[in-house]
Length: 357
Image (tube, rainbow, N blue to C red; front, side, top):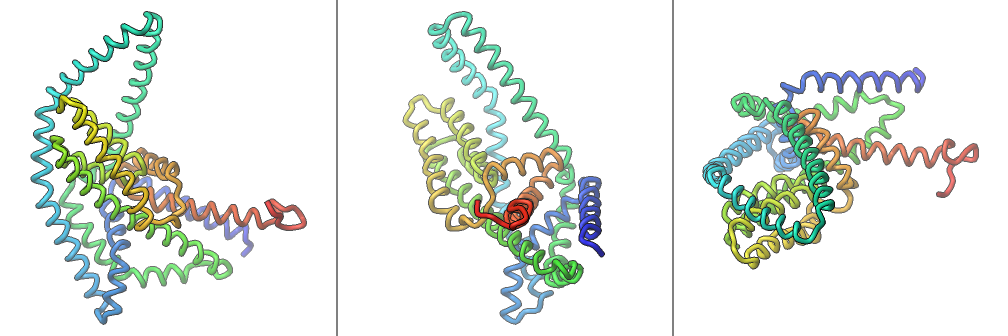
């Protein structure tokens, strides 16, 4: 079979696969979560196998440990987070009124310094910017909610996800070997090399970034609580959770934390302490934690990651967020491979072959 025909078959298969994911996106969430869990736990299963345990026993032990740890974390955190969320919801009208009063004071100060024409232009600009922001956030949240309706069915997630994780973890090596047998023999070595790079990128980013998010959530939660910020624990934990999106998590938590500090404290010292917690956390994350746990070999630009996560959420909801990292890593690795092939081929160097850039 010619290379052109092979390429056409592969492209057709990939297109059908993507179409199936899009059509079945409403029921795939437990399976995607189970696949993610098995991918995270596979190195531990390999370690247990080296200790002499069978693959089935290793998968059973790890699945049970994962469930026990998950239930324990939920039992410890959910009541505390629930009480803070309810208290924050009860105080929201009061905070809104305080913010409105302070905004009016700020507006009065601005009015005293600007001409009527400048004020009118400022109002029009702010109205357009606010309208666009609200529309974008509303569309994003709507997409996340409509695509993440499987989260409502907690029974489905609680039952199907562990089962899928167990079977995939038990048969992971067999599945990898079977897929390797299906590779076209002429290009098997090249495909294996690219898949190895994709796996390295995913392992470095996903596993490392997950630990970074947990550490940041604990640091922000404890730090904001120690400086006296009411609801600091929930703000800190949520900031760490969404820190999976580079810079977006810290900036969101910073804005929310400073907003709460402004309405809670009378002096600027406490507000400065809240800001210092976020600044110190960002310095530690950028200079110590991420370089150690994630490293520079990931090769995923922050802008590319932000776009991938936002696009995944808009298209597939919560499942799209889960798939964004592996898809972005795959596209990144394949793009670099395509660029290297282009630079080494006649399309770049002409009939004489490659040329130095």
